[in-house]
Length: 439
Image (tube, rainbow, N blue to C red):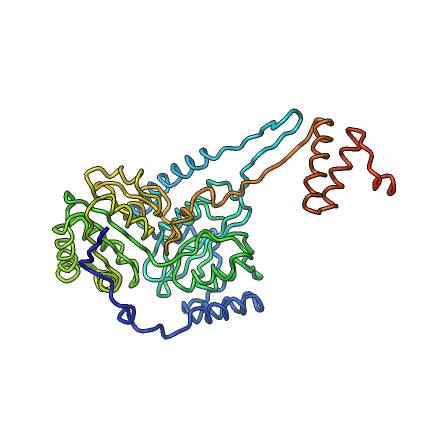
């Protein structure tokens, strides 16, 4: 396969200057301070980073209702519609997860249960925009899974309460809502403070500080994914509309200044016209996020021409992109040909933005090639698949005891072997010197 780049990402040195701060060092400092000082550190960092220091970060029931009352009726109706889509899909996911009990041999029963995590924290970002859709994806999905206690954190935006986000969090079923953002929110949920309860698991997207904090605290708590910048990849054949390709690539490029937006196509005409449309959209329309999208497109955008769709699918699998949009005559072919993606969007009637905002599948998805080994956030992430065992038949227990004794001694685990010996003696009458020496 000879892949021809008609547009390459900018060289690494051209992708902007080095950050003026050390994310890792800042995150470590915040986590250590929250661990040592609790609420005092949380408040100090909220004042520093968000200029936000209310009497209580937790919203009361009355405050929540007062905030919801300020949200336009159409927005509230849309939130309920989208959440119904998300709930319907999540409930179908849960129904697909079977529990079972198997009599593996006479009198020996093995089983599997799906037990929800007890305490979950959901982070709903809000640095540039109020990302209320993340409330549907994290909080609502956790409640469908059966999580009894879900708290949500979202930051104020420029000192203002994100009313629509609070409404979405409330309707999604959050048991408590905190106006708190950034590393301090992640640290508070993971470690617990005087007023913020410790959780067992944290879900939700966020900026580099949030992602770094989740990664550092992983192990003390569970997390959904190791997240990176949003990614989009479009696979297109000669029948695809270059204008559609351009619009859909730029729809994701507006997420941030470091979003990889990639087109892989079998048509040089589609490739060149897509590039031209991108430039026109970014320079001659009133797209409010054009500057942000233009930075991503300039520094991380790629357009690649290949000779066949099989080559396009193979190359797309190497990228293992978060979002993969298939704009071909037979888009369902990708279901058989591709393996590595966070989510597939099939055909011109479908777009990544539907997945982000309203269609019902979860938009918290793997990035940075982690789609090679994991899927995105779903009901399963909030459930622990646990097993249980029960031996009811005495003879079966004795036979297992003999087997356990032999297997354990092969590994030189004498203590394990003796647990098996005891059952073999009790239920089959075997004689073991070590038992008679002890009783």
